[in-house]
Image (cartoon, rainbow, N blue to C red; front, top):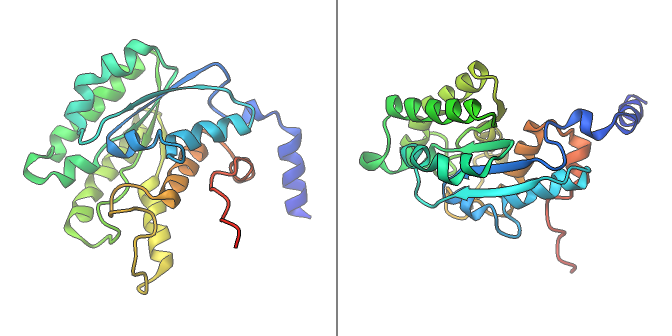
Length: 232
């Protein structure tokens, strides 16, 4: 009965009242290779746009992911790749390369400075920001890269709260999914190589972003993000 009442309330509530993005708005997706690949047919960026449209929100996508980019690179190209195109929203996915690239990466103090500047410049231009926590570097949380990434993600969560940005905590969701699989997990669940998303990882990312935009579980399910299994 409770489930039926909840569903009834969802059906009686206008979709636009629940979703932060409105039809006619533009969303920029700033990121690295994960975001660059996310514009593919089953990439997370494509799935986010599909999920919004399935729920009556016809927005426009501004792809802004470049392979290998770190926070300093994204800050440098923010104006040309994002602000000059006048989006209403920007999702920010940054941190994996800052850590993964080791000596050529970006130390935490400089990362904090770069990310804060990106958010400040967006907000000064009237662009609303959703921060995505960085996913993982190898599907095993105890490894040194993932342990180093903890402080970067803690900062992103704190910054989102301080700057009143939306947050998609993808790292926490990925960790939970891998932990649920247990110690018998042999192959990657969400990535093709420990970093770049496979179809399940793209669905996870898209669902996290859609949830961040305010979509309910029922609305995300309506979007049918995953491809149907092939007939046997």
